[in-house]
Image (cartoon, rainbow, N blue to C red; front, side, top):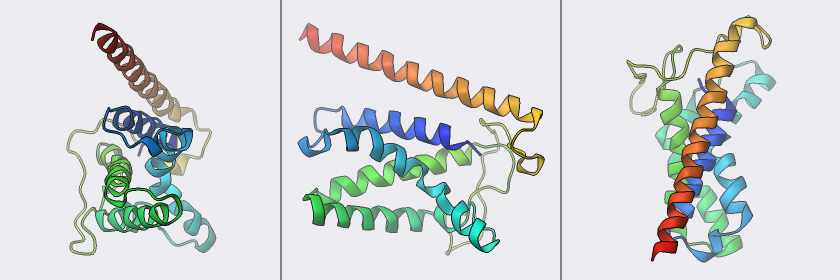
Length: 180
């Protein structure tokens, strides 16, 4: 499973791609929506470790990693934002759902584990890519095991590459605007 770093960087870049489009609502152009919100939403699915620590019951990759939860969560966040900040419900729901779903995409392409129960409670089937992209994390080895160097190196390279792609895209966009 990707670390919170990969989820955060992916959410940040995805949020920037969406929010920097010309059709972005004006009220979404603040620092909160452009920086903090995408990172938080892209990583929130992994906050299921908190009840796991408190109860000892396995929660990770459980209900928070299902499409039903993603839709309910996106709906609740959108309702709250609509009430307090007069946000457009439909746009914010779509934005939140895309960011939250980015978490599933990264987890889907991870080596190791059973996969994701995306369609729970309708089916107990696990979904996992036959061709993994992210290396396996061996949680049973502890946090500071030397065998995690491969994973950490991959995550750092992934994050740097995705940020470079975003930076190049921003440069290309600014040059394109200057030409017009």
